[in-house]
Image (cartoon, rainbow, N blue to C red):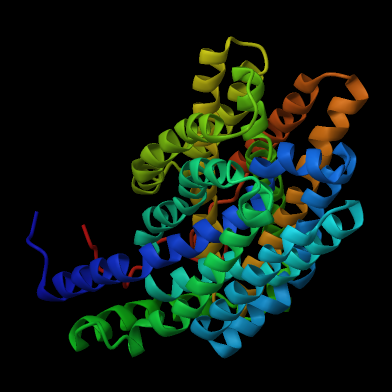
Length: 446
């Protein structure tokens, strides 16, 4: 094996520098975004007891977030592509932080649903914007691991957010506010503060990163520009042209099912753990709920990277989804200890299936097509977020059994396996050069 050339070493340093500068801040942003959308799962018991919001109204309000999120997703991401990530992502965070804090005033069915719908509109564009932003900074062969690391934001939000939310709920009565009000207020204002910081911390692309040495900045930007040109040569340049390709709908359908499983678990994990332990949601439940997400982080560190390096992304993704489905089924019947272990496999599957999935559309779409395409995929996934709590609640009501809801979410995971293994190969030979996973012009960073 020949030693790496000087250009490869410069590029490797640039990627490493960008990884340590950009990714941790994006993880922090994603943690807050995820926590602000699922913290109602931690507040559920106390919130419903204090406000009288019914179970069906809660499920509807939890899900309506994703309908308005989906409605504004595509225009938000297209505007980010036009105006730049730094300004637009900062705007999104400040807006959703204010709305999330306003949840402290949602005291009945109507106000709960209304503010949740506003929250979805405010946050629209954030996640696909982050996916698009990562394509601005990291070459294709690095993207699976980078996206897996970025996805740490969701388990970290639940791992640390669980105990923190439990502590905030225990502040019931402090300064005349109930615990659930402290939860919404403090987490929403934290998002506002980080959003303001994002405006000063982020920059749009490596080419204008003053914190990166000139030779590294130039090498990384040149490689990313070369990858973008290869996508343009393939012909998928505009969003409308991408819409005419059935592969985009295939991607969206997969992500729809993945989001049903992920959010169907995230919204109800605290209450499921509380039922297993026979206690109310609080600090103890928050700490126990953090165990599955800790396992998810450990697995997410290496598993998606192995999938990309071996070229077996479909196989590894299917195994992740299999872990979700079987883990859910076991968690509905086993002892508390076995159920917690099963839930660890569920969260590990959620954590690893998503970054593996995103390596397919990010290798396929570039330019405006990427901005709109990623938003469309995430919009359809957001509808899955609306379906998840209503599907689970509806199944439990119809069959008069909490296990029925778990089965319904598991069924989505099993269906996703079928669609995942049918993802077409995105290589020049098999897609008439629609896209490439690893451009020939890209030097190895290994």
